[in-house]
Image 1 (cartoon, one colour):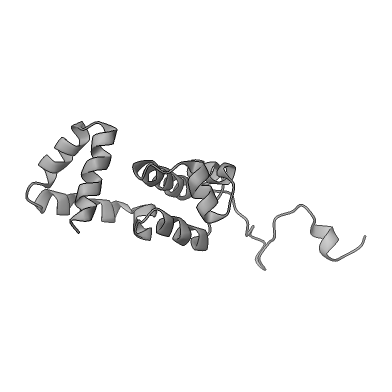
Image 2 (cartoon, rainbow, N blue to C red; image 1 turned 60 degrees about the vertical axis):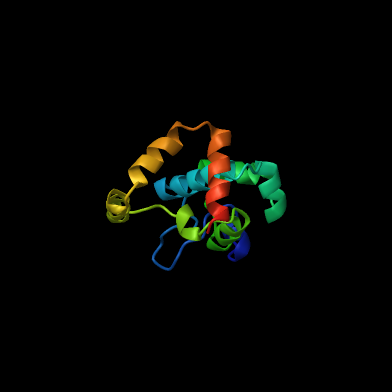
Length: 137
């Protein structure tokens, strides 16, 4: 049997301890993909338009958003930039950070009412409100 690169053709690379380096996506990857989709839709950007801006196909964006394909950190940075969003908004939140966020909302006067009112708006109205808020920053 020959040794060399042909021997491992079609197999995932392994680290020195025998662990697969090209692991499949997991629940974190699914959360990241869902966050990309949510922000893309909020920004009224099509998969095709985002794909063109990133130099990939719209099918690749579909795979990212569904969690079928893991997103490299460098690509995630580019996506965040194209969506005009902080990269942290695309990352999964731990239970502790969610609790801290909820506590911050609870302690911010008017935040709960703002959320309730915003949630009751139609999607196009939500886009208008978000645009107004962004312009006020």
